Image (cartoon, rainbow, N blue to C red):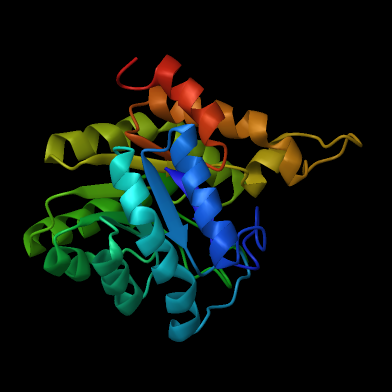
Length: 265
């Protein structure tokens, strides 16, 4: 899953593809690089981010989805929409999206009514406040219980394709993120036993990777441009653990990882 942020303020590439032409060009580039899914989002979910209006997100996302749906189909790929708004999700499906990447884990009824796939992600709190002081009694058990409960709701509503995402970096400390990655095989086994589509993992360029790596000046956190090695290493770890999809900015590098470590390797 290649990331396409049509936003001015996303943590990694905010502003680079905020315009329609730049976004469509980058989406086509991700498809050319081998993305199976291009994930189009118009509202930043970085820590501290404020929500945007329905009209603004709609105008950012839906035209880009419409422009990329045909090229994606021709490449044997698909478009997903990264949104928590039912109106944006429905319009994106009408424009050609076939997967809802839902950080709120609340849009299963939209997925059911439109006949598309759905990703249920775990997030503690909301983007504006989620990293203020995240706490868990047992992060692995709580995350697994939550995403499987939401997956069950989706199945009961009639969603055929259900993915779960532990939400790395969404209301978690570095220790929480590492624990979730370490115990990822347990979540993979649980989703497989229940017959869900699989586990989606997104670690690309996230802050905990910078915390674990010193920057060029010798002090953490390493800046964004020095987190690619950690991004690819954690993508490899997720695939080895059985994840069915990884959400990345560097599609070309991740594709090499997937060919080495993925399910089809």
